[in-house]
Image 1: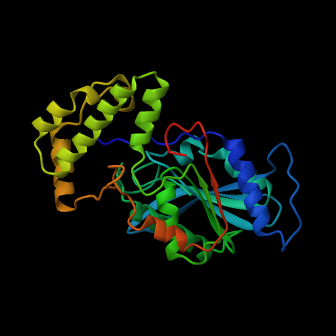
Image 2: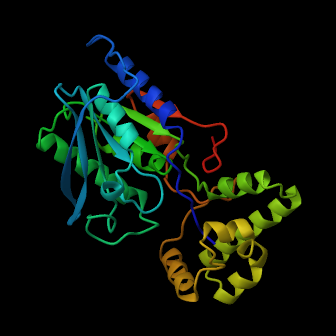
Image 3: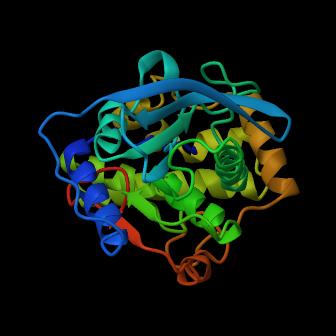
Length: 307
């Protein structure tokens, strides 16, 4: 019924070039351009933890080796579980930042890695923004190298999170958004683009999308689990949907009832034009109030986020 696929870490080289251009432009009047080598230079990595809403979140702080850090970038995840420390996530990006004198900080979501709490696939974006704000406050308090100029780098779902954090912390200096989402749910685009790539007939795509949206409508309006099953059969049994949901044809009755109760207590809002769920209220207004350098990178062949 509701499922969002996390963005893969792709186009890292392109991301890196864009990040470098933005940071160089931001400081063009303050220091000479930085010459890049083909290989990342030295990086010092330390495990670091900070508290947010009574939970301890753990991650990695990377700093340039044998040189001063001229800035620090907080890395914000897309959708899904994380394993930053054990699997050394974003290593190429982190080391490239370090090569130009830029520190970086990234942590595991609650309930992932060594971070406390429970993982919530549908963690509210406001809660994720609280993590960013707490991390920035921690880094400044600890006076870590580069904390005099903190910016954000984020992918996919971070397109919702970063603006909320930026609107609450006026000292955040810049934002690099990679395949950032707009105000609406992005899963419909993922479905439609992948079905089209797989050669589905347009009429079939329209019918499957209608069933997906109908499933949401049933839950929001308090419909029964039986109604959900009967009106989403083609969608639930579609091979691509099954692939996305690890072979599970439908959410369990208990999971459906839990979601229905949540949405009955706090009904989500939907865009009347697209029919998609709105994830950030007043998103356009929040963006328009930002007055910092922003670099937005999109991929024409992105199959997850509407570029």
